[in-house]
Image (tube, rainbow, N blue to C red; front, side, top):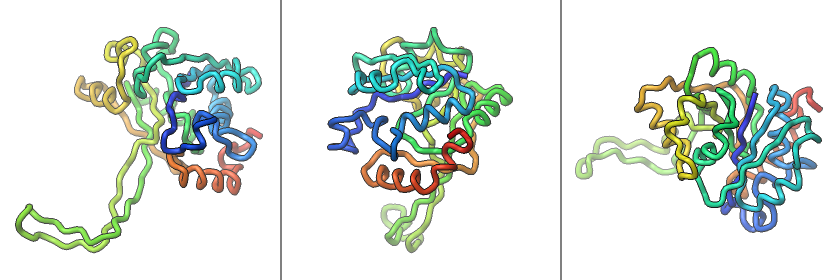
Length: 238
């Protein structure tokens, strides 16, 4: 298995911490966020990882080198300009296997990557999106109306959504004619294009922990969760 980890973001919402370190290298205990992900991917059967970098890429390279320390073959792709979340794939498309995993480098999860990959292959999918159920509570009374007439009053409603986990699997042949070399494109746009072209797109979910580490309060929560439940993220790997 191959994996592509998107590690090129500036981490604006985590400043000033990310003035010194790229976001994927923010520590969780004695590990960085990215090292936790890499160790999990190794456990799942991934042998080769592409790190797509931009901001402070030299620090990421210096830290992980060729990946031998983790039992992985790590290669790097450095953007000369921002390419979005799907654009970086255009720089490495010739080196990718027929099906490969793409994920953000700033998430804490214990999702079973191997199970998700097997699901993708068994479904013959062109793209598989990892999804997570999220509950959103509105702390106000919501007024439903037609811009003039009152229709309904809903006091502090709770809405349920399925959100993207930032973990996807793509088929190389399905996307290679959509992503253009060195052209900006995000994964939601790529998936929407695949859908309009009638490609087979699946959604995958399982009962797992998942946290997007985008803001300072998310990062503080991730530190707490990781320290208290470390065993569920590494299982029997350590």
